[in-house]
Image 1 (cartoon, rainbow, N blue to C red):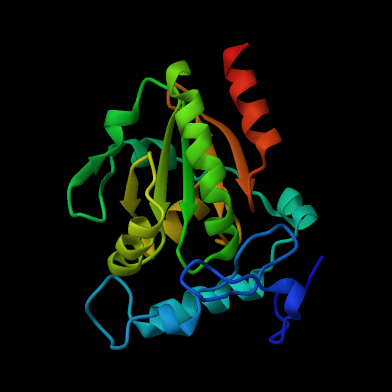
Image 2: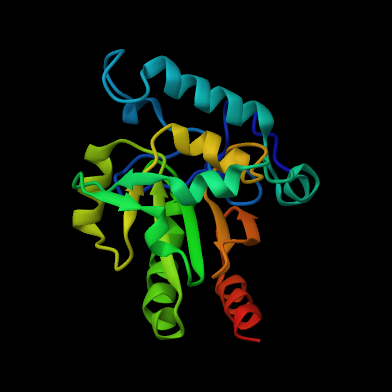
Length: 220
């Protein structure tokens, strides 16, 4: 497992995002911190300040999260977290309400991502295809951006997605932890059944095999 605390990752441990930024990754293909250049320039304003983003990065970096470590560190869902999730109303990057209750009753894949997270950006085309191909089977995909509105809007202009995106902000880290993501690293994906139950969790990039197996399990 790579040591996420190493402040000088080699070239093989970095990948450029679509916006030209990069962020250290762990062995599971999970991004551990946002780059300083993506943080707010001043304190106050959006749900986090520069200090809040730095705290997020420091906490995630200290936690680490290789594939093997994830299997050991994955924790149970916090009591009430799922019920709370289904009552949430996020906002789209355009500022429109996006109630979770509207997704209830059909399979839902929720992907926590950010524009500053290289593996998040890399897996989005795969999730986009999954959303298109599995729509007839009732599947839904929701992206929850642990990010600021402006970079998400800019990113979506370059790479439009067929599935909705909700702005989770820094609060998305706490939400993912409540769902069992012990480190708060990204990307983090959960699959919820038609009854709202948590069926699958994965830290790091999803693969085509992951998506195929999840779809087949619900179709069985």
